[in-house]
Length: 225
Ligand code: DC
Image (cartoon, rainbow, N blue to C red; front, side, top):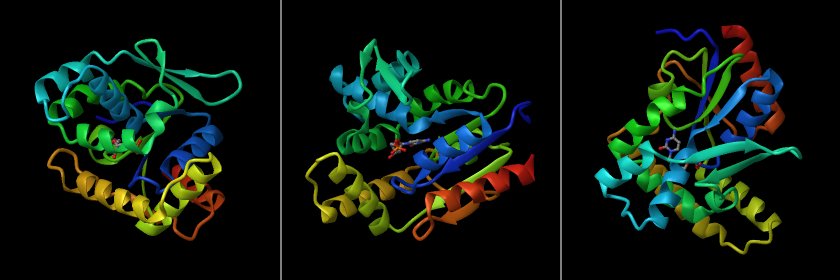
């Protein structure tokens, strides 16, 4: 079924620049944004709080179904993420939470529970959806599909610089290993593995500026509309 509103899907591995590109493209188009990774991160945090193990299919699924989370745009810019009325904006962005989200995301029931919730984000005038399976599973009829890649070293370097700027002390070698482990888990799971949709345009962002990628993506949307 073709949706009445346009949707651009941006999939790819951790650190490929998806979040930044999705945000800038959404702003340029005036479309809404779905950060689907945040939903998996929220399920992971909620599970941790309630002491539910990451392979407890039944309880994780129930948790994902009734996930009480909201994204509130802030007046000064950015989005505040609230879980059961608690501000978890920063808590969901840690490396640990990313690793936990990747484990939770391998769970079939959790993915199914979040499917309709993600589709409900598609409202007028359009949506930019960022994740791993946006173009393959959640929005297979998307107007335009992009798959962003970059070498694991380049992605780890970007994360290293981001964390350094925030004053967080991390090792680059450790980040490379983390990224490789997460890629492997996201690509090899049986449920909705991370893969480029057959009709997606793959862009290697290793040597491209953010502006250059945004420009290419906007051109693709304009062409497909
Ligand atoms: O994009 P991110 O780093 O916030 O995503 C965190 C984890 O969530 C990622 O390692 C795998 C999972 N995820 C997923 O399985 N499907 C999505 N559409 C988005 C994220």
